[in-house]
Length: 337
View: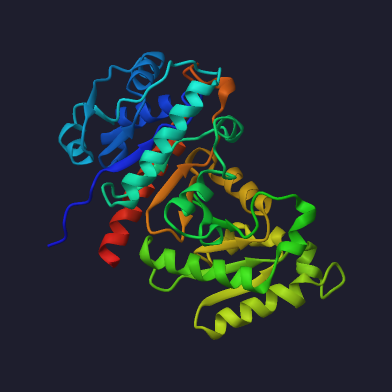
């Protein structure tokens, strides 16, 4: 028999952002949303204060071991760890950033040791983390390092009900993209995406579609050479390995309704080429999934939203979707392995 899945771990994110109140809302909707048990790492006082701002009657139970979470989840939100900070929604400070970092670090350790079935990370403010000693571009890169993997093995996939999209280059200037694109980069990330779709999403024969970089996918070299010189050879190599990969497809055609029916994930050449359609289609249900790591990790596809934090207007949809997807991926990985 398959052993029951461990609860999910949730890192608090910046306590001045919308993360804490959305975690509380997700717990309040746990039954209707079909969420698996989860526990929050640190910030018990923050969680209790966030619940009050949302008008949610919430019991919070301190736990000493992740295994205790499942036993209390039906009646209370479990919180692991005594580290905390004041709740100052909309006003980030050093104490909050230190709490966010401690929560992330403990969450990574718990997931890596197999004490949780996955890690869901609430949004952080990268500049605030840097000010307290964080030395990574973002949470994804930190988690790769914490798991002993190189950064290029941690692949960002944005997933929603309508689309799964992977930016092959991520946080860089648009002008730098052509120089960063290589056939090896495309092949490496495509292999990781295909394996993750099989292992975590239960798609036996994943179908990948690869975008072009230039208008009309280069128009036969009229608008750029990257399609012929880099992208098409990478696709041919992947197909020779037995992967179902098509492209390069013009960016203005790749995300149309009819085209989306033909693939399981789209590989985009740069950040906005992937994120604009995802957010246009699935803004309140978009999930950032990190592929290529030995742990399951998801995050809502939005930021800290300091401007609306504590005002009881932030939509919990993406946080709920991130928790649900983490549970589904953990179950898929357990059955695959």
